[in-house]
Image 1 (cartoon, helix red, strand yellow):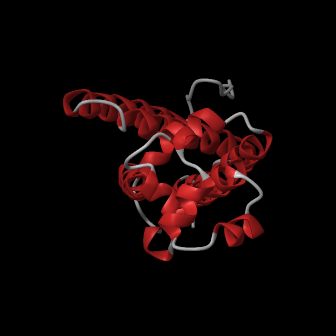
Image 2: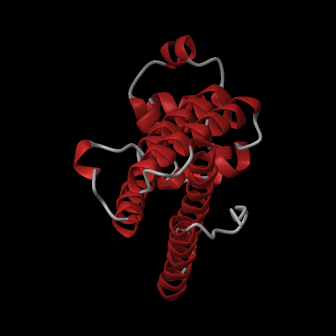
Length: 191
């Protein structure tokens, strides 16, 4: 049912999709559809919940990520997030329309915090002397910047994509390198 909804987005706006359209596309009785979803908003929220879970998983580390440098780490996140939005790409407009819905907002905040913790764990692996609180702050920043970057890349022409990607990567790399050297913005000097 959820895949059928996303398939329907290829040919129409989400506001124009009805429960009858969805039941035909999913090849199920409309009564069965109503058994699982009371209305189209419930379908949309469930589809968005699945996409957000997939996006959050893009930040998960696997054993093969140990020992990666920062640029390789960002490359991996970007590749996994691009794959997520390639499979759910038609949902960006739906997400922007529903992002302030209480359920989606709650899920988004939970995911941001989970991503921050995942990034913080990786940063502490990269910089063993980095404190937990500072790693969490940096993890939040990396998660937000990467999410905003990839949301924007979906709408930009190729030349602008390359420029935005390069500028974002440069900014993140410099920030993390400054942290590694102990003179990052927002940190106090020990002098």
